[in-house]
Image 1 (cartoon, rainbow, N blue to C red):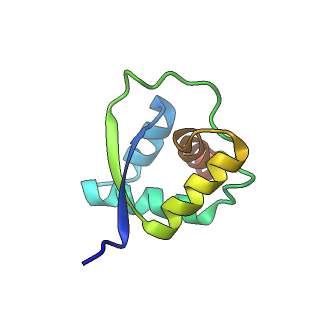
Image 2 (cartoon, rainbow, N blue to C red; image 1 turned 90 degrees about the vertical axis):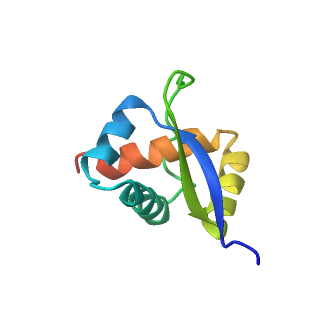
Image 3 (cartoon, rainbow, N blue to C red; image 1 turned 120 degrees about the vertical axis):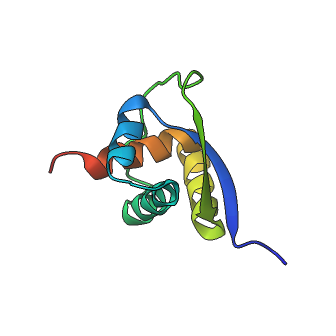
Length: 98
C-alpha cells in the first residue's frame, strides 16, 4: 500500500522552533501545526529564511502530505532556495506580528 505522506526531516532555526513548540502540547501537534502553516502561506512569495547554519540544531521529522511535499520541493527548486529555508520562512512569516 502506498503512503500518502512523506517523512521530511527539517532543522528549524531556534526562533522558528520556539514559535511552533510554544503552541503545541503533544508531539503530533507539531506536525499538524507545521502542515497547517505550509498550507496557509503562499510558498512562492514567502520570504525564505536567510543564511542559516542549522547543522547544530536537532533534526525534526515531519510527515507531510505527498502533494504538499511536492509543492514545497518544486517551489524551492524554482526559487533556488532550500526546502528547509522555505519551511523556516513560512513559520516565521506565520507568527510575525501583523
